[in-house]
Length: 248
Length: 248
Image (cartoon, one colour):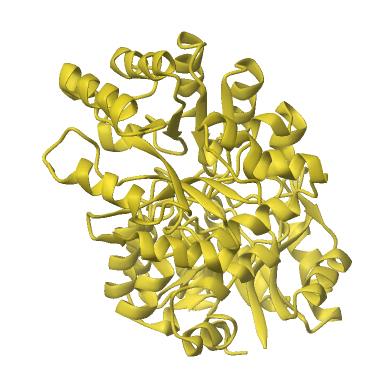
């Protein structure tokens, strides 16, 4: 059973859009059983309303695992929103340090992430932004909040230079509460990040995600299909690892 | 026919990118021929780098069909002599410049000098471009403007964040070609073709670090017309690199 750790629906201030129906059709086309779904940053910037919409969609369809979006800069209001998401049935929180402009391991945002840990909400971090969410900064967040489960999206490789690969590997090796999501990681061939993670760290720390609709689920599944790792590792990457993180 | 405009063969810096591995990946992806470059810049500390590159070029001549020599402009006259000899005597058909490994941006005078020399010798330049602060498309645009008689292939076409800039630069400068390897956006090939025409988009993979199957899926998602596909997948690079073809 294929699980997608990272899909979005709604309309993004930055352009992409996808309805729940479109997502479900994409999932059907690619054999994806369930997806963690978060809202985009909407044009009106109202993440609370967007989260409420996701909660309704997830309540209506058990193929959707609801995930809230958070602006962790907002202090007490962010803490309250984490609790509201939990009460609304959402299972995780996603943050984008570029769209909401913060450094992921800074004191400014720490209380919001502590609240996520207390609510037992894993956090998905859009990772690899210079200054904001490099792999080593994501690792530092997880060190500072050891009870928080952190999913480092895109392997922290939002860059073509590959200079963050070593840090991502080191974080995975040394920080047990970090998992690595695969969408968009440029290297797919020999000596790839996924290959190093599986063979040198653990096949259980890598999690498949599509980043749909920004990325294409077929292309993202192809990354896993061609990975130079054992088939059993691919099976874990495509579903069971995420199921364990989220207690599905 | 599919020709990969951007592949690698070298054993260096912990990588083992052998001709055998590249050809295996080409077979898996359905790529007929590949233009390669090494991993080490020459001249440099590795005196075997250039002979090793020539050996790789001769290892599978029906599959590995042309090479870009990876030059370090910091070596001045020594580098110029090597590059001239490589083109005139050893059959090298292109120049590769990686701004991060040579620690020089594309618009630096020392780089522009070599790009101009490549044009004088009648061979194109393949630049690494992307998210490194000294490998930006706009910098490559300034270089291309200063060298109007040199064809410039922009590898990765701006990486994760600079696709828009890459397309704008190609729109401004008729000697710039876009190569989308590693770029995770499923719509990037379509956007490139729409903006500058299929005549200036070339298929590349960065294999074996990236897998041709993933890169070809991206081209498939562009929904190109047959004549556009032929240009992108082999005709453009065959012309740029003067690749003799039996047109099988």
